[in-house]
Length: 479
Image (cartoon, rainbow, N blue to C red; front, side):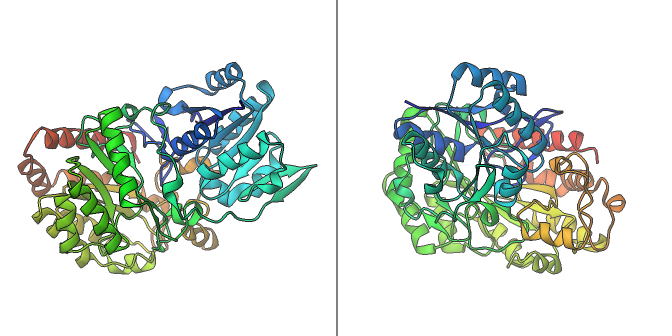
């Protein structure tokens, strides 16, 4: 039985590096990690196929590189799969080199960054044997099958590897259409309790995926461009509800968070899922993410009936000019209308804004802050614009000399605005994120809205977690 390790490797340095299953890998002051669901899927598939697989989240365990490598040496795996990212890449390489030198096993890199950097990684670093592109969880299993059956790596689609000193890039693997064939993610190696987001209200919240891929073309969004693609693929309503029941029975989960890029793409299919939830009387609160123009009164009402408590929207900007520039395909008025309707139906409406997009100037940023206050969403997150390798925004930033970095490690969120806009330089943008958080969350109307909507202990728990998260960001991101 071949031994395999699937890992979110160490990310040394100040704070906590949140990388796995994160659309914007970064450091943060508080230990709030996103559930590594694609790694959990990979471990589950490997175990189902008879491999002796161990899923490790070294960031959660707070293991440094030396401890991580020692654990690998003790386990003696044939291969170690590491989810890597642009800002953590120098540490990922250091970890891989030590694994190769001290454990001698095969080392494979995966994650969105590999779609952009797969060939250079294999060419320049002889201690990395394989780079996996696109949806890596399924390909991990196929790599292990090939190695176990002594088949050549040329038989595995979607990977780049080295053979006799040459870099070999296999053809791209087609995305899996029948997601019902995948086993449920492994929640034993990656315990649910280790991953609690600020907007969770439950005592034990589980992350789920009910679909993959997003047809939207937002220039900044990394997953559709580097991992899951733009073709939307759904699990069946029965399969999704079976997993919810499984999570409730085995792990006593009391809340679900659907981490799909967009929960509703196909309204008919969405209604089928909501009806299945209602008919099976799951009675489990859940949250999801939607586009402001992908839902309407009818489906929001059905979502509420099916147990939805919060919808997270990507607002991005209060300026139509900026929304058009990033191909958002939505308007501020649509955001305003859908927040009001979501709240009218008794659900929380939350969302995010991006500060410092390439077309931003002082006026558009002021418009965004004013709009955020006017919106009166229950919870708002502000993030600095990041041009991550593999995205259209990255290509624009490089071509127009807007990205001012010396290395990818500076993309970890602790260096202020690295992406300047066409109208504002880095100095002018300095401290903007911190200012947005302070201005928004000290607004009397926002403070009052959050307090007056508290109805039960879950709301209190959500409010306190959110407040702690916001305070941690203000204190940690000094610039």
